[in-house]
Each structure stands twice: as C-alpha cells, then as structure tokens.
Length: 68
Image (cartoon, rainbow, N blue to C red; front, side, top):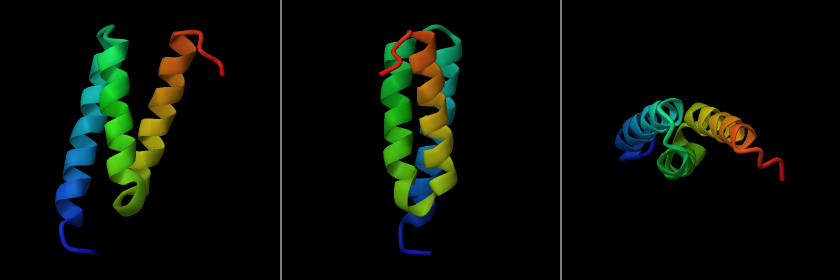
C-alpha cells in the first residue's frame, strides 16, 4: 500500500457515508458534492469506495430525473 493510502481510504469512506446520509435526508446538492469527493478519493487506492460512490450518484440522478 502506498504511503498515505490509509488516510485517503478513511476519508473516502467517511465522505461516502456522509453523501449517502445527505441523500437520504433530502439534501441532494450536498450529497452530490460529498459523493463526488468520495469517488475521487477512492479511484486509485479504494476502488470499492469509488464504485459505491458512483452507484449512489446514479441513484441520486434517478431521484432528480437526470437520466443524461
């Protein structure tokens, strides 16, 4: 594991959880910011977090009827 990867993974997972909770409590704009950040943080060192964040962003888009 590369140096600092653990802190990136933890930060990404926290942002993922934050984004999901914001989405579920009806705050889509804030949820989108948190989920996009989680996806960016996870892309290299935590692909699972990246995948989950992108999936949640897809659900957010469906809720907003943004099917582009």
